[in-house]
Image 1 (cartoon, helix red, strand yellow):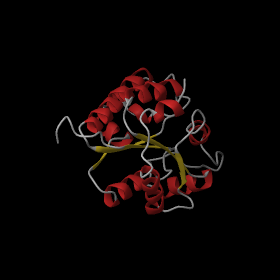
Image 2 (cartoon, rainbow, N blue to C red):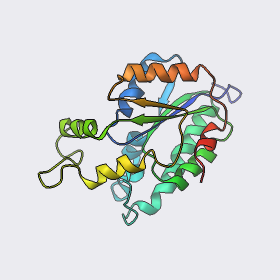
Image 3 (cartoon, rainbow, N blue to C red):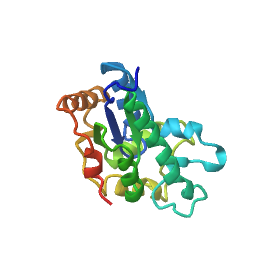
Image 4 (cartoon, rainbow, N blue to C red):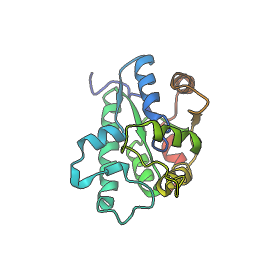
Length: 203
């Protein structure tokens, strides 16, 4: 792949934990033509040392967390990598949980001039809680008798889609991963315009 190759397409999947982003990533990688790299929260966290965890997975409302000062820098590094892959002609699917406007706007600026599709991955709270209960024990916060929905889960639902518009939205409670991927493929066929992400995320 040469530096003169056309830029690869970028699909950003934004949603709360357990909303189904990872399953859509798998469907995209399995069904789309071309090479699709996954650069998102799970990959980023696997590279993040213990003292900086949860890295870009930091939840809304945790500005006093020890890792909080690093999060904007970690997001900047992630999106610089996304941009580099795209400029070399590789397609990229990014699964993240943006909830901070300033950080998301900085990420958008780093993709200037590249074809980006910004997708909101929605999922109702009751389905989110079902998926959390079905996950490996201890991996996600779940309900207790005194706290049917943990406050961090509520904050995710309230903040992850609040500050921006999307090119496309999918709902994983009523659409399978393959159906979500097919909707994204149809929207990609209309050729996402450069700098669309920056127009949708405005500080």
